Length: 358
Ligand code: COI
Image (tube, rainbow, N blue to C red; front, top):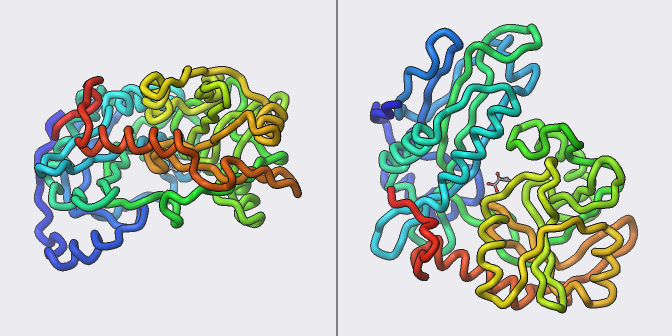
């Protein structure tokens, strides 16, 4: 699909952009353009372009507003010291977007078109790619049922869009350890459900549990599986890892209800550089709590595109608090995080071919 630029006639001034980028926060500010494309069952994908950023006009009967037929992605563009701009493993997001779309009965946007839309958007808004600190341009491709129709079936009109947002750390505390609330009330996804798809509904289902976490002074919720409520799945919006005293780097295996995180996958690959054995297996909540209590679990961290690698300092289960790594940031967590960021920001060699230049 062609993503030609229809330039915004009223882009933000250099001063406005500089003010935003001085303290972008996460997901609060957006660039001057967005990528769009429309799909209809009759004509397939068409009307693709890079257009001025702005609101959609939505009919109240638009299917996504009623039945949540929607999928999304998250990836980042990084500026290197020489001014060049790079994407991190964008083909992984493109492939997952196809899998998510299939699960939600949405049309396939070919990976080349997904990548083409992102590259064209980043090129148009290159001035919005942060060059300082650990900031990046967070990219949010998404696709939703835009047919105005109340019957429950897959929409015959679908809108694709990608927006871009200059972003700092996801958690307000930056890279300080976060507190996690283990939900005993709610689950995120069940076998046969949409847990492995990146769809809005999964996140909607996590919000009340996330609120429960916040009410208990925690930053994120940790979910267990829906069948036995015993096996670790993931956090509200990110995957989870533990490190053990015998140098295993363990993450819950992909159960069909866990999101296949790109950062999760990258960390499995980086493990050996740190003398760690990567392990994907089932981990039970009691095993985790016992391991923390006995000191066998030495570090615990959350990971995702938005969260990068964020240390977990405390796990809260009902009234009990389990402190990991003395409530601080473990050495290996710090080293893994730095290695990942060094690759993303071009400070270390990209020996795996993870970066794509825009
Ligand atoms: C991401 O990590 O990119 C996500 O989509 C998760 C969300 C918490 C922002």
